[in-house]
Length: 366
Image (cartoon, rainbow, N blue to C red; front, side, top):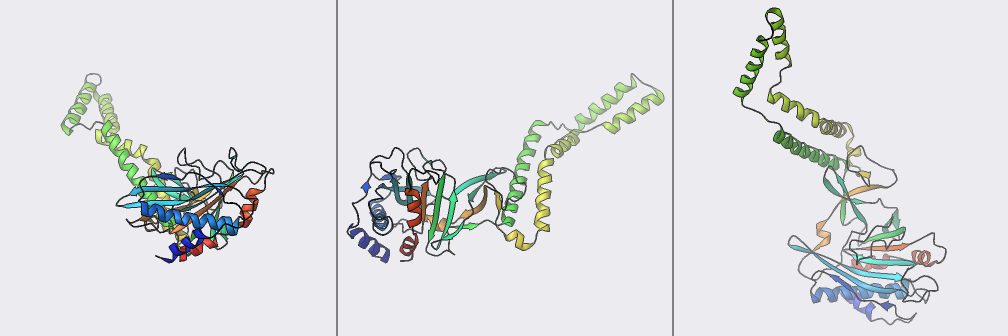
């Protein structure tokens, strides 16, 4: 039995003396999870609830309902196992079971970055995006996001429709995160590769539409056209007409080449622009994070400092994918969702002031 399990068992067995137990809802499980893994996850969930109830959100002012969330997804030969808790806090004066419009929600999910990340597709290639951190709070990277829709109609752990989400990324060590930041150089090289691939696809499509006849057939048609001129013109006028025809004549190969150049001009221009950046920018600048508009579909430059800009990252599979044994949490994402402008309740503000993710950080270090 490892130290994490011992700590969880101790906490789950501790008496709830400060206030009545929080109301438990039915857990939600997606995918196939073994009984051993599920029991391990439930033990850790109990320790999280006990921490919130006993040490963080104490007293009768906080009386949420809560449930466990468990998800298993196949990824190659490994499993992606995520789990955690989701709490809903009723509005001030509302009964504890009245969750028609909760004042705030709080979730703590292990091994799942989806609450923090989005997706940007540039020239058909998908990139994982991350809203830049607001800094470190309580020894953990802190983020603020606009609420986003749930991944699934029955899943409400990614914002719950609230206009504000504060999130902490909790790892044992802030220097060891579940993702790496994509540099400008790597991004530019990947964009260039995507553009070249798109150009190849474009050329294939053009070739399928433009007929290139045999050289014999093209020569025969050319001679036929010249001969037709001799039936209409003679002398110097004929020679002038022949010369003009030959100067303007285009073979099927010429037409194909011209179509390719015309239709791929924008791609070639962008590739040239990117090549210029790769050769002109300093190594330090190219090593900086790639920051782009959240809705970018093409590359028109980096968006450092612009409102709504996102940072591109590459999730580490080693942090997220588990083997066949019980999945020990590698990181947690703590999400608090509420409406800061709602003056009818102060629950969200109170929770924000009291939350301290450093206890969870200690769990990961054990």
